[in-house]
Length: 474
Image (cartoon, rainbow, N blue to C red; front, top):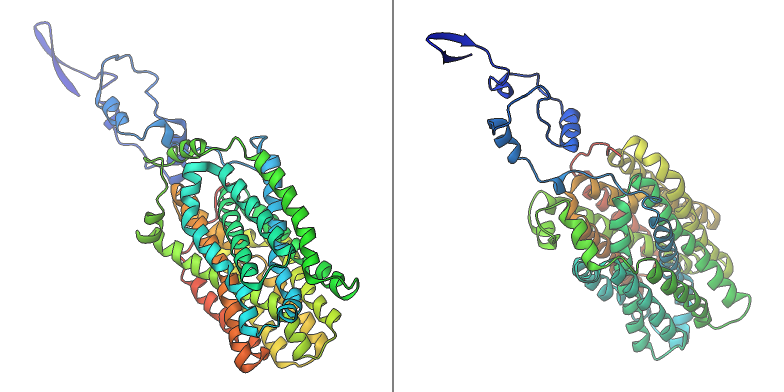
């Protein structure tokens, strides 16, 4: 009520304005608030007052339009995403072929250069330098060069590294070339995981992305083993094939992402933050984001390490400990990567239905049981089946960690944090297989099994330490 003078009498009148926005209204639930914020502020339809009110003043304090949530990108929206996603799929196929080739090639590289286990294990350790550099440079590359820079560096490093390896230079040069390949892998891992992890139905897309990594990893040992044992070709002949794959990657990736410049990335970042710079420092040092970033980075470090250690040393283990023939032992590596690939495709659709946190908490103990079977039953065929099933259940671990980060972290930290975790985790492919090789030199290759079992237990602890997450609204 407002009392106002009307002529010579005082009357109490109720105006339609009557500070109407201060009248109590039912509390809004979360979904209604999100819906109203997406539509933007509105004025009462019946108001005839044209001057400023306290309602106008309140709306002035709302976030600017560029802070309003936008529709998540899909693999086919906008249309340019279709060839771009396809090029990412190819890059991961090349990465899988690169990583899985170590296992079947190690015995022949060791014989070619007359190396010990420790020295030949530098092949695993050398990409660590590249992965570490990629972890810290990924955010800078995005800001300055955009996804175009990611495409150029990733595919270019692959091509140059494979050309060097194919001419089988002195061993120290070979190690340096693996560092270069590791940098390309790290940039690719960081950039494409962060981008696709923000799309609608990210679990399924990342399952396919990493499934194609697994597909490359299935074909690589099969082709390399066949070329060496059946066609009697030298070990480095396999890299002639890798040169062709990397050359195609250069053409496809660079052409698809040519317009994705640093300026475009900075403008997209500004839509989700007050700043056009996603701070890696904030993601690593400022809670609560730092907790998620480091737990996922350590989880991926352990996961990738055990994946490549198991896939890389399984051939030597089956030859030395299970007394298998060279070709049959090489096929166990193929079985492991095949299980990993099928697991990513199949479990990638099951994981989001039961929730990432619960799903991985189930998959890891099952894998530990299979590892015990592999270790304690000294039969060649039992070991071959057990290692293939291990691959199946650990397949969705990497995609699930990326999706978890996209749910738990604010959007402006995604590229920096996810990129760091993916590249830092990828360095596990270098450090842990090298450690296995160093221990195997002193104790024998049978140390592979207790090391893998211990790593499975450690990453389970890291995963349980993550905050609880809700199902993402697509």
